[in-house]
View 1 (cartoon, rainbow, N blue to C red):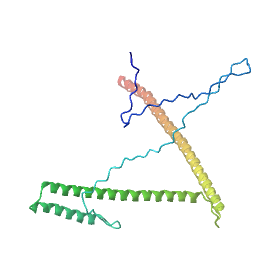
View 2 (cartoon, rainbow, N blue to C red):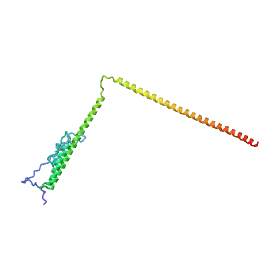
View 3 (tube, rainbow, N blue to C red):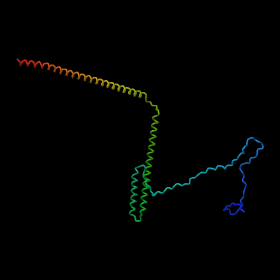
View 4 (cartoon, rainbow, N blue to C red):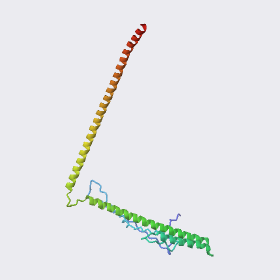
Length: 246
């Protein structure tokens, strides 16, 4: 005969206990028949048994930032901010170079020791340059802010109207009169120049006419003189021929 299937019991239980079965309860209420007859069918009302919304969980980022690596040097460069820093920095850099060069005279020294000193010197120099650069940029930014604020104050002062004991109306009227007088003088000079230019053109045209008239008169005089010579020449030739015949 086939044996019924047996559900396996959990392994973690120390003792075997009989499994208790409970009848399932339907969450939907059983609709009772309506004693009063109705033409329309009324659907039974359903009761929703939804689980409550879970509360919001704050996610905390536990990723730790990488720790800063220790600097390879112990004594950084220092310089005065009130005076020129290059003198002090040059002396400190010279001392570091001397200490680096003294490694060649020591007995128990490895090449790695030289690398460590050189790396420390590079780090000190780079950090010092970064610090000086940040100070210079901060000073430039402060100066730019001062210039911008000064320009803003100047614009605000220029836009304000001030009451003074000085009569600005008279100054403006005298300035307008001077401008109009200067404009009138310029117009007069322009008219004089135009008139002179017209007179010069007229004078030039009259001079050209006079020269042309004199040239025509000279040509007419030369032409008349040639005609007189031509008339006198045949008369002289006839008289000389008559004298030869005689």
